[in-house]
Each structure stands twice: as C-alpha cells, then as structure tokens.
Length: 351
Image (tube, rainbow, N blue to C red; front, side, top):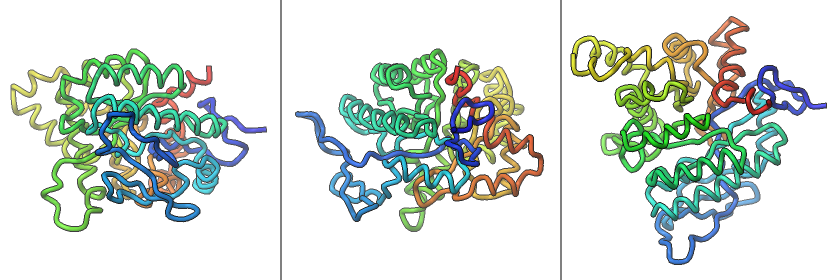
C-alpha cells in the first residue's frame, strides 16, 4: 500500500522518499503544428536524437537537447526515488511560455503543454502535481487559461516568467492576473526567461543560465516588493526560482534605501525585508552557506526544494545539501516537505 506523506495528502508510492521539489520542468515529446494561418516563427518542435534523447528546435535552430525524462513519467519517478523526492511540481520549460508569439498562438501552445502536464500528473498516481503556463502578454487569455488549469485540469497554480517581453512582473499591467491568482488560491512560481543583461556577459552561451537567470529573477522579486504586488495581495503565494536570484544581495541595499529616500519609503507601506519574508524561494543555489543565508533572510517557513530537474544544470542531491546545511530535524522537515506543501496548498487538495 502506498504511504502518505505526512502533512501533504500525497502518495510516496511506498518508497522512502520525503522531499517535495517545486522546480521541475516538462517538455512534451512532440508538438502539434501551429493553427492554420498562424506564423511558425518561435514555435517549437522536437526532433529525435536517439532512443532516449531529443532536440528542441526553434526557428530551425537547435535550442536544447533533452532526455525522455521530460515527458516519460516512469523515467522521472525512477530518478525521484534515487533523489529521495516524493513529489515533483511539474511546470513548462520556460522557452515554452510563448510570450513572444502572437497571443492566440501562445495560448494554443501553453494549452497543449498544460494538457501534457495534466496527463503526466494523472499517470504519476500521486507523485506529481502541476503548474501551468499562461500567455501573459494577453491578460484576458492568461486568466482564462488559469481558470481552466485550476478547474478542468486540476493543477495547483502557474509558472510565469521573470519578465514578459521585457516587462517585469511587478509592472501594474499584471495586477489583474495576480488578483485572480490570489482569489483562486493559485501558487505562482516565477522562473527566469530571456533575461536582461545578455549583452554584458563575456563567454559561452551557457552563462545565460549561470549568471543572467539569477540576475533577472532577483530584479523580478525586487519588483514584487517595490511595485506593491506583495502589499496589494497579502494572500498570494508566490515563489522565486534560483534562490530568489540576486535578491539575497540586493535586499540589504533596498532596506537601507527605504530608510534614506523619502520617496521610496512613501511608496512602500512596509519595509522591504518585511515584504520579502512573504515570498518563497527555492533552494537552487549550489552552495551550503548560501542556503543557510536564504533561511536566515527569508525565514524557516519560506525556503523550498528546487532542483531544475531534468536538465543537466541542476541540484542532483537536494536532500544531502539540506542535511549538510542544517542539523535540526524539525527545520529539515520544513524545508523538505512542509513549506512546499503550504506553497502548493497540498493539504487543501487532499481535503
């Protein structure tokens, strides 16, 4: 009989797994063609490479080589068992957000990806939950798909980009979407996508993931503080990938600026540090001391496991990292299970 993970209402499948990983991506094994009359520019396709791998192609250029763990439930579960992960929150590979497509083409794309995620959740028999993509360049379409994802598909929330075609998430134009996410109780996971600052990097293209991603996530998280998003929607459950990116370093400067500049203080009802402790951050920082610092700054209840599975640039043993960083069993319980369960509202889902 499958065991039930304490406090989450989710099944471990009888293994000794206990972690909940909120940062895991999905790529479908195939994509349909765009609807008749829609441009193919920016539309993804998948080309088989061998029995277990394929290449995502966009605009006739290879984007990324991926393994079949991106779309095969059994492969994912095998890896989860080795990693000690009981449950993954599945979300789109960020390049599948489609913000740069025509809005209706993007809506078609994310609906297909969301259906793929929902099918994997069903196939996983309690080992997966889902976070949908939405076409945020069109707020009405995004809200409509949010409703479908939460209702018809039974997903737990959404994954969104750190920016939408250059507009950071704290921009007031996105407030209606966040209002609806809060009203529906949707978890919102923010991931870097097409980050700013690429022209300032010197070196191979992989520096986008290593350096530009956390920079863009940090600015997005800062915008949620300075733009009033967290203050406006106090019940919104929002998490930021890559440990909140550079926010960990920016926050002391922002706190000092709040004390020094009257205009900044007048624009924010609460201090930046107080507001920052309302958001969640994942543990994907690749460093034990930084992980300890995350918990010290954002709080014991606000750090969750994130691995970036199944891509190569990921945290391969997240539980070992937590055990190395923290001696207290009660704190490790929070970081491995309880905080993610609260973010994803898994207790509510089980009821």
